[in-house]
Image (cartoon, rainbow, N blue to C red; front, side):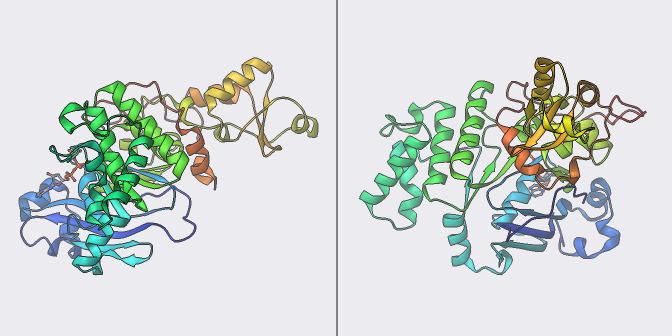
Length: 395
Ligand SMILES: Nc1ncnc2c1ncn2[C@@H]1O[C@H](COP(=O)(O)OP(=O)(O)OP(=O)(O)O)[C@@H](O)[C@H]1O
């Protein structure tokens, strides 16, 4: 696995290491057998009848982040995320939540994990058709054994939080797809889980409603700081929502990093082809383009931008100022950007150093809501193999 992201601080919410999920006969033998583990998916299938949906994956999900698992159809996203709470039983590897071994949990502990600590929001909302919105949202609390009055009060609060006030007494059939997804979201939120797991929750929604729901997630995350793991096959959605993205291909994580790291420093030709059409200036921040101030006067005077400002925002600032602008972190000048450096980023001619900034994830998040907002949904297709030379490659 290629990891360009910065090291985690504190106990991660989820810590995953050496995780495998193999479907098929005698699946257990695959992870431990180097000859089998090294086979590509087609060979493994023809030799053993097995599919390795998740292959030797490791990552941490940090408290308060939106961790996106992205990849094309069949790359292993759903299997990976279902393994986190053992909705699918892993074949090998370790999974911990807040340091506690998930693979060692007994049935009761696992149920408690799924009910209280890691709630899942599915693409197909799984709403109970004969129940009202309010009772659907209260359902998880009912399972937890909360009394009727208390759970209805709590459910009403969450219904309002996701923008469904006034619809409490409707049944799912009387709602639009987007409204139903909000009910699914409210139901997961009602149990106040430590982490929300989203399995392609918005892929069935039309583009405008989808954007509303993405903004809802950004808003909830900003307001509550809740840890989220979000599966998507849509690059634009991943860039918009993710503090960090794990990009999967054939069961492996081929790159794990901030949106800026993935777009600015693709780990291989596959990732490079994947992000080829992303408008770099909307994702990369001024950190990518800045240089040290040439003189103490340059560091002390002139307009400023935040270090997490996008290149696109900095271009506006430079064009308004008519000169280079300072990059100010808490009022301190940490560098300078000028028109030439910014244009180089747009042209893809900068070998970026984005992996080296300790606060890149925080910067990415700040830029996140605005980022990619108007971009068209990504096509669900395998990227073309990268040609021998692309405009992104250094010449
Ligand atoms: N129960 C199963 N038995 C056998 N193979 C399976 C099973 N579930 C998934 N797979 C295979 O594992 C691989 C990964 O599937 P998975 O559903 O995790 O991918 P995904 O990235 O979530 O795809 P999608 O975006 O289409 O949902 C695929 O090749 C799939 O066919």
